Structure formats: structure tokens, C-alpha cells
Amino acid sequence: MFDALVVGGGPAGSACAYWLADAGWDVALVEKKVFPREKTCGDGLTPRSVRQLADMGLEGALAGAHRYDGLRACAYGQVLELPWPEHPSFPSYGYVITRHDLDALVNERAVKAGATVWQGTEALSPLVDDDVRPLAGGGLPACVGAVVEEKSSKRRREVRARVVVVADGANSRFGRSLGTARDRRQPLGMALRGYYRSPGHDGAFIESHLDIRDGEGKVVPGYGWIFPLGDGRVNVGVGLLSTERRWKGINTSVLMDHFLAWAPKEWELSPEAALGAPTGGKLPMGLSVGPRVGPTVVVVGDAAGTVNPFNGEGIAYGYETGRLAAAAIGEALSGGGADALVDYERRLEDTYGLYYRVARAFVRMISHPELMRVCVGTGMHSESIMSWVLRIMANLLRPDEVGPAEAAMRAFEALARAFPDS
Ligand SMILES: Cc1cc2nc3c(=O)[nH]c(=O)nc-3n(C[C@H](O)[C@H](O)[C@H](O)COP(=O)(O)OP(=O)(O)OC[C@H]3O[C@@H](n4cnc5c(N)ncnc54)[C@H](O)[C@@H]3O)c2cc1C
Image (tube, rainbow, N blue to C red):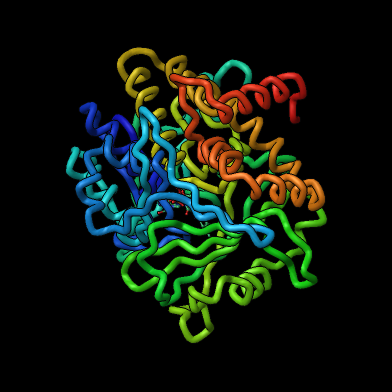
């Protein structure tokens, strides 16, 4: 019997296990793969992720990773280099590091803090206690553990815990078997990435192309990226926002081929430079998956749809929601019970509610190509406009002063309050 059982050892699960173990709770984590393992990702860490890694005592461990200074935004023939802004709570740099290396580091940190980690062990099905009263107003059932299987031996056993954390990523089979579901009216991202050898591998900026096109040359809602890894490779990918039916038929492999042909020649992204076939995945965003809490269970990271709809960033939100969940679990285990666990939902709403509502409105807007062309095309003529757009999209607004970015966001928030999105 553990205090907490965490299902999944990605950013959300390992961060949650770290913060629980650091607070002295007896926590077990099951991860179906064995670290280090591949995870399809752009490998880009923004200042928000770096802050969380530093708080877990891991910034020193990133010394071998590629540190970069900001974003090079490219669209409609314009190129702008936008450094990460100064901020009282976040550093003004990021890193690019493969998930192969990064996720192993964070999981190892949870082990060092005292978490019990079983790698190569899959949570097959939840153990549900029907005698525990459900939450008033709905929510997930009372999950009190899981049937887990050690993959190498096929040995199965039950692991029981006072609280279960669902951190099993975008597909979230475990979460769905408990009753979570994605709100299909909300946007979903789909992305594909591959590694390439490139002479630009050690550049000081990550690069985003905001005007990617489909096979007929039409601009689609999404972006193409080239992120330098500093080790001879770049991570190249395309992300598409599936907001309306008309974007659902677009094949990301075709988009990727077009992007590779379209990307600036100095990157030398020829088929010969490819290091393996590209792989893809889904990005559930804007808190679009729920319910996220039950009397003895919380859902974190991609399993809860926490990716930022503005930019497709999910690693920071995995770390952050894992940490918010650990705080609520600590209070629940200290006597607060189910009421304290429900507080996780309030913490999510306080931290992201309004921001994500604005982001969802933004996604609906950019699914209209003409509107997107006008907005991006106009913005790209002004470095100062794009600098504040970057601050909004990377969720790096300052709490201590009101510049143009903060003022614009407050206006968008007022609009979002006045016009609910669902
Ligand atoms: C192509 C692509 C590019 C992206 N690029 C970026 C980027 O550059 N920057 C960024 O911030 N975000 C990016 N994202 C988003 C980011 O990858 C995710 O938001 C992030 O990985 C979410 O972390 P997580 O811990 O919730 O889930 P995951 O990272 O998916 O981790 C879930 C873990 O749970 C394990 N698991 C699943 N089921 C079980 C089970 N039943 N039992 C035991 N273990 C289980 C899995 O093996 C996995 O290790 C990208 C996503 C895609 C698809």
C-alpha cells in the first residue's frame, strides 16, 4: 500500500513523483518502457520548462544540452529573431534536448528523491473501489490502484495506493478506462518530427515557419519547426491544428515533405540528411480532457489535455501540472481527503483557465486562412509586435508590470470572459 501510485514516467508523472517523494510521501511509479527511451517530440524546452527543471535541482544536469537564446520567426518572406524576454520568474534562455535523454534524467531525479520506480511495467487496468462515495457533481470513480504487468516476465500483480495519478500521455488508455474523454469541440494538435544532420545544428535560435502550406500551396493552421540539437543534428517537424472538419483530411506526412522542400537551403535538409523515418503524435490541448479528478485520483499532463494551444508546448505543462497535483495530494493525504484533491481542479483553473480560453479562441481564429494571413503578415512587419506576441504565446507575461503584451492579453481575457467558448 503506497501513499500514491503514478501511472506513466513522462514529464508529468516523473515531476509529480519527484515532488511527492521530496515532500516525504511513499510514492510508486510504473512506466511501461525502459529508460532511456525515445518519445516523439520537438525536444524544445522554453524558459517555463527550464524553470521547472531548475526547481527540481536539474539545471546542472542540462550542461551537455544545447542552450539557445530565442525564436527565429519566419513567414511570408519576413524573418525576425526574437530573444526570450527578461522575466522575474523565468530564465531568458531555453534548451533543446532529446526526450531520450531528458525523460531519463527527470525520472532518475524522482528515484533519488525516494520514489519507487518500476520500469518496463505497464498499468493494465485500474482497481476501482465502488464503496467510496463519488464526488458531488460527478468526476472520476475512486481508483485505489492498478493491475500492473512486468513486461519481460509477464508477471501480473496488484499495486494499491491511497491516491492514483494518471500520467499516461496523449493516448491515455488507463485514463480512458477510468472515464476520461476529450471534448471534441476543442482543438487537437497533430505533429510529425524527424532528425536530420545539418550544418545549422548549433544555432542560437530555434526556428518556426508560421506559413506552412499543403500540397496545393494553401496556408494551413500550424507551423513547421527546425530546432538545433548542438550535436550535429536538428529536430525538424510540422504541427497542424485540427480545429474544423476541413483541416482533418490533411496528411502531416505530405505537409512534412513540403516543409522540407520549402525550408531555407542553409539547413541542407535533403532526404540524404535524414536520420530515420519521421514519427508523429497527438497534442491534446487547452485542458480539453476531463474529468480530471475523483475522490482518490487526479489526471496530469497530456492525459488531461494540458498542451498550450498557442504554441503546442506540453513539457512545461506536464511538469507544472504534476507539481500542482503533488501539492493537492499532499493536502489530501494530510487529512484534507477528497475535498483537498478537488482543489487540484481549482488550481488548474486559477493557473490556466482564462489563458487557455483565450488560446482556444486564437486557434479558432487561425483556422480561417485569410484572417491568419492578415494577422501574421501584419505582425511580421514589426519586431516589437512579434516580441509581445511571443510573450503571450509562450505564456511569459510579467506579473509585475503592464507592457503592451500584458495590456493586449488583458483585453483578450476580457473578451474571452464576455464570450464563453463552449
Ligand atoms: C511531434 C511532437 C512534437 C512536440 N514538440 C514539443 C516541444 O518541442 N516542446 C514541448 O514542450 N512539447 C512538445 N510536444 C508535446 C509533449 O511531447 C507532451 O506534451 C509531453 O510529452 C507530455 O508529457 P506527459 O508526461 O503528459 O506524457 P508523455 O510524455 O507521453 O509520457 C507518458 C508516459 O507514460 C507511459 N505510459 C503510457 N501508458 C502507460 C501505462 N498504462 N502504464 C505505464 N506507463 C504508461 C509512456 O510510456 C510515457 O513514458 C510535442 C508533441 C509531439 C507529438
